[in-house]
Image (cartoon, rainbow, N blue to C red; front, side):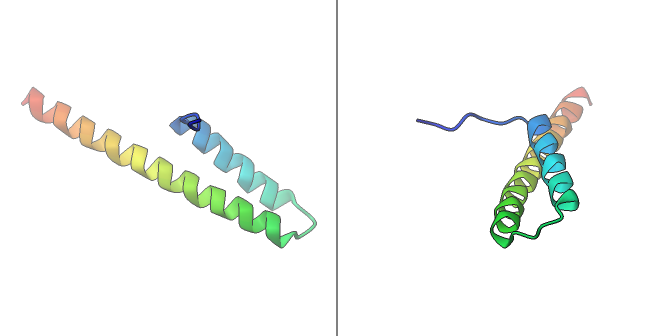
Length: 66
């Protein structure tokens, strides 16, 4: 069974949620923090890749207009 593909907007929303959770968490649970930081790193890499792919597509479109 494959994991459902997440969108850029969903990834950003989840990143914001993780940030709020970590900022508002009064109790420090190292396991939870480690888990959230790993997920955030994955999401940031995902977003970076999506932005890079979009940039390449836009550059190709602009070249075709010239």
